[in-house]
Image 1 (tube, rainbow, N blue to C red):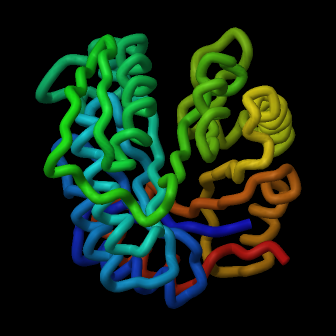
Image 2 (image 1 turned 180 degrees about the vertical axis):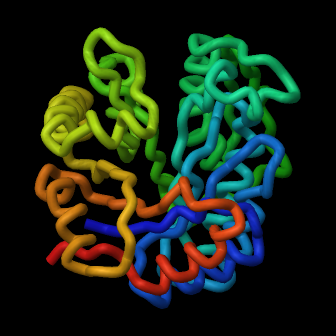
Length: 289
């Protein structure tokens, strides 16, 4: 099990400080959230890359359908080179307008189907863009004309790992995840829509996660990807006060097969986020022996 902290705030200076603190206190990853009209996460992570040497850096998560894939490729490549190969890209469809209209103040939501198409085409383009080599592409949403000059450098990593949200038991959503490098769980109980964050905590259990991972393992075997690394990335909240209590919260997920635990508390009031984040990071991750 590896452990990461997600900074729930927006202050870029605090974020860079926390990335350095996370490395000092044994965390394996440091993540920042990505908005639409918000602090630019990749600028923050670039600065964090220059202040750290081991901790992995990434977003949690990037709404890829809202991004131009060539710009995202350039940002992730830049941070990957600055960090000497420590970037992880977490991706999803983004929040629908009916769920959070704050994220749709500049445009209207084209709908889940179109966002899924944009995500899939971007995921097809990103590995090609990261190679920094000439290629052509003609798709339903993007066109790439062949260029022979002014090509970007490739990332340090042969492949920047991509973690994607997968809605279990939706096979269409999970097949997307199976082709990538990690699963960010979302759960839709049979006969119901996707559960919100509160319902996720109540309804999504380690046993359900293990069931989904078994399906993903079989699908990856079918795709010829059985030998490639793959992560189950579980998000949760621990207090950082009692190591035994924190370990007890994480242990069932580790035993079920989760490989990453990402810790944060999104309910902390805005005026307490900096204090909370410093204290939680300094307390260290909720290790399972």
